[in-house]
Image (tube, rainbow, N blue to C red):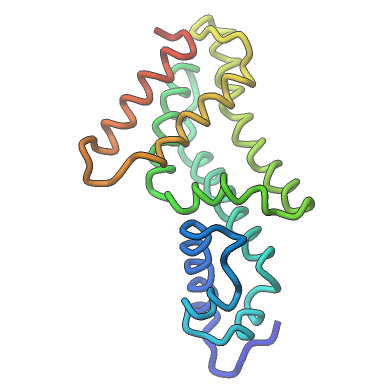
Length: 196
């Protein structure tokens, strides 16, 4: 797409994404117009289309960027070895990742329903890859006799739901530190999968 002479795509493009993320998280995707995003960034509404084709593409870009970042960060962190140690690493990783990106986490769950079908399929595939990581850890734990869950797939969904829910109540500077929250969630997750 052609940009206006003198524009700074390396500055304006990220500012558009940041503004959209903030506005979608605060007001919801359906309530936010491209005009409102443009106003937040300080550009004319028509100028947004030099950077992004439409609002749907912007939402998809935010959700895909979030999932790509999540998967890449896990790949860099993922330990090998004992399933119980891998499960602990997963729990602590997910809590840290979630607490440091509250707006991204919020729209990744609440605005998924606003994706067009072809975009939804792509995001669901990325989410499935992440869920499969936890499910494999649980299967390995079952096989090693460290964990006891009746259905590893359902247990993976339940654990991710519980871990992601931290985003709804945690506030930086509150009663518990991030490390304390991670330790509490690890204790609950460990017990939930029969690791005692």
